[in-house]
Length: 314
Image 1 (cartoon, rainbow, N blue to C red):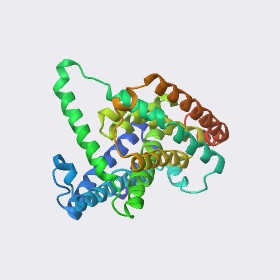
Image 2 (image 1 turned 90 degrees about the vertical axis):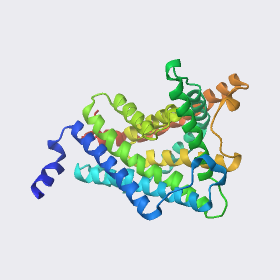
Image 3 (image 1 turned 180 degrees about the vertical axis):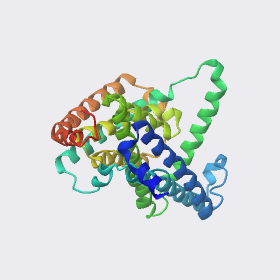
Image 4 (image 1 turned 180 degrees about the horizontal axis):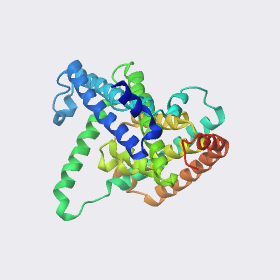
């Protein structure tokens, strides 16, 4: 058995497709384990989501605890195990070293001014309609989206002072770490080994990242966000910056939900004065592009170092 494990651990003897299969297999196993752990610790999770306004405090706390378990066992631990089994040293070395101040500021500012673009992409996504013969499927998906929006609204609600740090941990910190180390730190690495074009690998990983969230009416903004995170990693050679950007995006959204109340981006937000809104989106996106370009210029050396290490294709 030890010999077999040793052979499997030698990633040089495995094709990139096999490495990707190992990662996906570990993630699926992780989610099964997360479900079992949640059932063991919390039992029946919540009351029916059809009565969202009357969810008990205990049910909301269980939801948050379950989300923590899902992120830990479904994303972070599988990605760490995959990096160890497949001998991906970059995954572990990225825990070392400090974030550079100026590149970090570029990212934090860029993610802030990109909020109008993300909101507009969400609006466009909501306008998507299925063909008539799939109208029943569309009704089901929109109903599920409405239920999920209601759950999230309850999830981010602040009733006590400790809801703030707990929400930041579960919504901003943990997903940024867990999802970046899985999708960019593992999957994107192996897709780049398999595909000669890094841009295809980045956008393919971003699509999988978006699809994993299971929201048809949120797939477009997450796809674009995932691609941006992928490029940040590709340019800098460090996951720390994509983690920072992911955290900033989630944190800003959380702060806005506290300030203005949670609501899904819909026609009421972009239907009126649409040309003005588009102009705001274009200007803010242009500013973000300048900031991201400056980040790329300062961090391109790390990308070249990553290519020299054989982790990214030149």
